[in-house]
Length: 261
Image 1 (cartoon, rainbow, N blue to C red):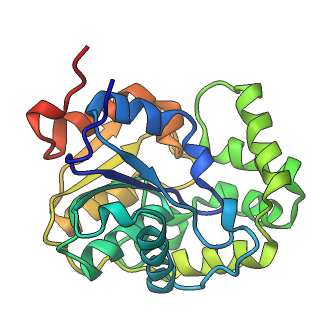
Image 2 (cartoon, rainbow, N blue to C red; image 1 turned 90 degrees about the horizontal axis):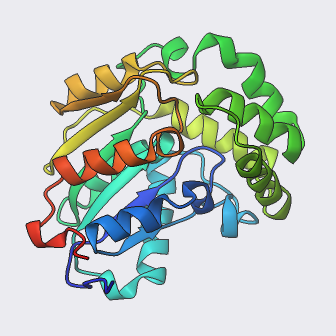
């Protein structure tokens, strides 16, 4: 299979305390199905950038991502992007679409939320308050166990959890960066609808962020709401094939972009 570089690339953005490796094989599978580039970035303070200081606002984090995109992917400058983002990543992606409307061709927000549209006990479900606090304070092994409990609804995959823990040891997110990102996400407000098509995707078994937050976003942004009955917060892990099917079906991809064997 040869990827066509002329096709609109897809940019994936992760959320709180996560790095690009947490997409697992999703980028490869999506790229194979679409026959187009699928790109990833790390937030300052996470992954390859774990030694950097994370900004404490969504606009500042978004600006850092835009700078990183320009530096890492100069070949795609001037091209439009389909942006697919999860949780806080969805907030960053929406802010990006509003800041650079000529660049974002479509926006897909997965299990995201907004202040002003949803109460705080929906944006972070009360059952997880103690776990979130412990996750911020805990070492990498326990932190990843707690994050798994809050974000994944499918059966435990020990090999994946071990990967998460190994990445957290190799490239740890500091407590201060974790708190900055939490503060940034808590203040985000989705007040305007971008010019591009928007799609809201939600796992109805999300234990971290209430699915009602996605309903509120869909209403505010006048966007279709696509739901999976059993997926949790980490929808790309819980329902990989379903998510890829939704993206192929609903985004404005060219017909010839489908994989040809």
